[in-house]
Length: 98
Length: 134
Image 1 (cartoon, one colour):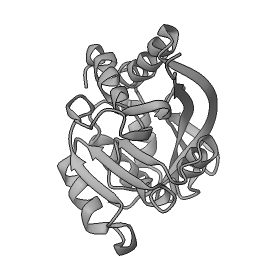
Image 2 (tube, chains in turn brown, purple):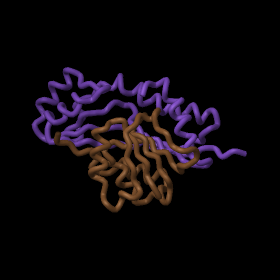
Image 3 (cartoon, each protein chain N blue to C red):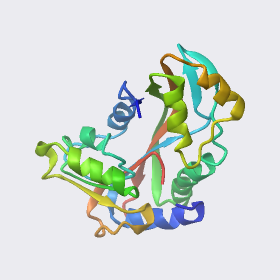
Image 4 (cartoon, chains in turn green, purple):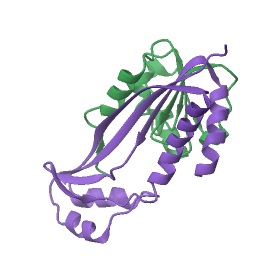
């Protein structure tokens, strides 16, 4: 399919205006193919990114830049299935919707 | 996720957040997505099945803010665009969506678009802070 999503980068710009991601342990819910993850991860301490669509998560894993592989982890899960240790996250980022 | 499960899922997720930690919520909000060509509005998509689900998540965060679990600190509305080389490409994209439909009369107009077109999405981003005990 030929489409370009958010060519102006408005989503990422809004996220970065809304919170300072520097040095934070981020839980991203609804990461899709990692489109916003790539903008957040260089700033964050770590990003644990979930999406219910396996196809998108596989794409995100394949496209993950080598420089981010140590700090980003992608998993397939619905929001209600996510298991994360108590008080281990500094910022929860809901992308689009639950 | 079904709307009734949203608050439960949010509570579970917020247990992972440190006291004083942040929640950033980014979602599409009304008005419905608009098909545009060179800034002219061609029509609106039918998102009557989409918004109740998306807004349930927002309402879940609002409910937790009313309980005092979260503090609402900031929000901003802004548009986002999805661009297509032609109306046919736009139609192909929308027909794959689970909760959004293209009205028949709009579909006829979009079919005739041979050049670039776009969908304008209205977005809302909000920031909450998890209350620290004491």
